[in-house]
Length: 410
Image 1 (cartoon, rainbow, N blue to C red):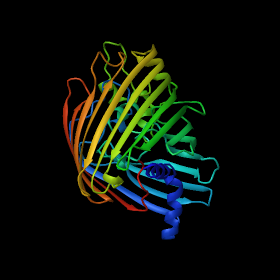
Image 2: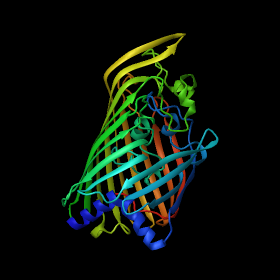
Image 3: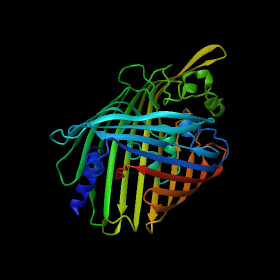
Image 4: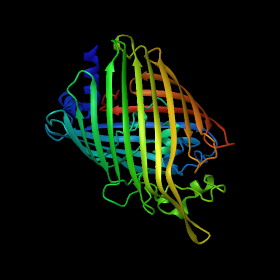
């Protein structure tokens, strides 16, 4: 029914705006406080990279070998008044044996602008593609698909501003534009505005049991040599001499260069298309549902790669270089407590990084939900990210949420 689509679309888009008001009315607590625990154990080999691509080493690796703590969140949110709503999210992660704290979100958003308009400013996750704007603990898998880990370091967030518009139509239509500082991977800008994103999202119901959403995005990032982005805890990435993780797997004897995440000077254009289809009998997702989601990335690079080599600085021009990647996932829920899914991801790096090798990964997972707020997940991953370095990865994960908890996006 159209009403279902409209209601869901509005819920998805305005969840940040409306939920706090409702929660305040119900609980009388100001601000709302929530926490998410995301912990697990993984058995895997050492991470050596993704197809020789320049990556964000910390966020592109996936779960560490052994016990791990990943994206454990503490969030505060509240409406300042009838017009403005704010949220702050801090994230605890473990890297190289030390626990680090990131400020992932700190934004204010309007709630009552006319004509379907809204503005968000501060630090927030970009509306690039389908998964990027979602917190990783809401994913159906232990880690992000290979294409996200390779191209945007799992997710892209930054300091900036967003303007979006919801069309007053039965079909869900959202148009938006974002401008960012460009201080986070994959951007590395020295200017005031180092990344921009424009996007469009559409959605509707096929019938009472089937609904869909599709989107297109175009993200442009500036990458200035010597302005390497750090994801706020990557001091190791500030210095090109410290790129041991990348240097270990970026040996390009055939090309004459070793590519690190900070060695590019130019522009990158990310063209992303996404599609999601959901089925649930009569729109009731509690007892039975099927979700199919897919995304495609086309990343074009124009600029220079450079590095210090035997005391001399060398540069290599890259024009219209492009990398592509995609993933597709199907998750089936057959009871309120159990679901299972399969996901396949594949990349096609340009000749700059590969001589034809295509990194890929296949994931199988099964979830057990005691309640809506606690999930135990088992996952097997056949990882073929590096040529001649296949890995069988086994993970067990617990995700639990406490406190005020808004509805998940579509």
